[in-house]
Length: 131
Picture (cartoon, rainbow, N blue to C red):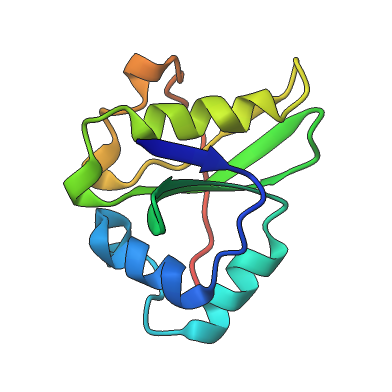
């Protein structure tokens, strides 16, 4: 049985392991424990999914809880995908946001088609400055 929490103490090593086991590891700095330490410390809403003691999913957001939440990462272990874990991580995130707070995200290329069936609306006006 998968359990969800917003209060887990996730180590950078656990997060890196999960991102490696998901396709998100291809686009995240999994070789930098310092970056992952900062990613976890500075996100202000993290929901995690656990199979016993094993971290199998994460929703990592930056938000003001009232107007907008940027869903920076949604990662689910590839062996646990297609079980509704990603959908539930988003639902758990929404539960903790204000009733009129929107969620914004940039879809990973492999997950681009995933979000529409969850009620997300495509918006072609995203802009980025890469380092």
